[in-house]
Image (cartoon, rainbow, N blue to C red; front, side, top):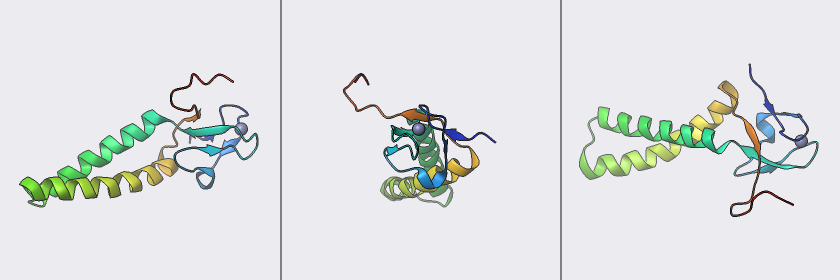
Length: 103
Ligand SMILES: [Zn+2]
């Protein structure tokens, strides 16, 4: 199984080390984060699954939108945690938005 590695020092990152939105590598203290593409995919999947579930249980109109929105937050959270264990994401260096990542 693929493991999550620090992009700076190759330290093996475990699920218990991960924080959102970013965290420090336990060995080199470099600011790292879970790949944004990964989080985006999980959220899209969670949202689709949430709305599909609500639709299949018979919700329509406003109640479908409201329930879907609430359930998608819950689903995305659960899928993100499960995903870390089942399909470990790529770890990337945390770059502050609006900067080029240069020091
Ligand atoms: Zn590191």
